[in-house]
Length: 441
Image (tube, rainbow, N blue to C red; front, side, top):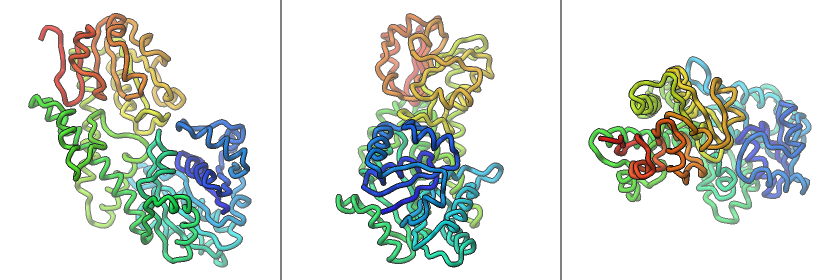
């Protein structure tokens, strides 16, 4: 099949590359000529493990190409995917659909035969019907159907998620469009991965409901962690005990500095706004947003308290700034709240992150970027772990403590323990939802 993928952001690029690996002829389209030139040179604008090799393989096989020419890409395509950004609109919390609708209008003028126009972007309920109206108005002669096909890709594991999905959601209006979507996902049908076909509105709602529920699990365990600190319980043991219940499950029950990234913050805000617009407030989701913001502020308080309220003139080494490991994505990362607060309090901040510097240099002015955790710790007054990259999971704590001017660690991902820190010579150790350690207490 010939497929056009409009947008080479995270979702569009990963999806287009994986579709080409299924054997389809895929053209990825983007308005940014620099990004297209980069991709044509074999350079990948995002960090996603395994993506560079998959691009190289399918470009060499002639199944994958990149262009800025949308009409040429859409001409003759059996399916055109819209995978452009839907950021939160400033001021009202709505998803900004301007890029989606602009793409739909351009596609309308480029359609040359029956085409299924598939929305891959995360969009509010009712958007696909708006896309249908835009295309029909722009080109009344166009023969097309619309479909909703939300993505469920975890950054850092996106290729695995695409090739071995928990489920695929396809929202359609008729059997003809359903058959085109079945042909696109035929390799997964043959391997018996669950493909759920729904109406358009249900497919749109599934994406928001799923992300809001996962954000709720993260926020719930963070709130329980705060209570554990007050009553003397250990959040790791509590999470393990909860997660053994098959009705709950152990995923997304890891206490930390709050959720971030490209999906959860944006999608919870959008769902809350959809509820308000329909006169049915999403009270749980609204509370999740509020508690997540409070969780980030609580992390700042933890670091400040660890330093007895004195951050001015102190040197703080921060390990990890991306919102999660195995990605270079800084969107809504906890570091964007925590680090500016440290700098604002007068601290000198050193940062180590395997992939975060490319975006982080613009987003975190005033920090000193370093490549090595031990060098960053040299003569530092505090060490803060914000992202649980593998290289931070097996640090030589004794070596770190000896290098520091004052060995204090805020382990905001619960990688280590108070016992580990004590044995290594740290004078202070704080974590999330567990006992802290202060020498002499």
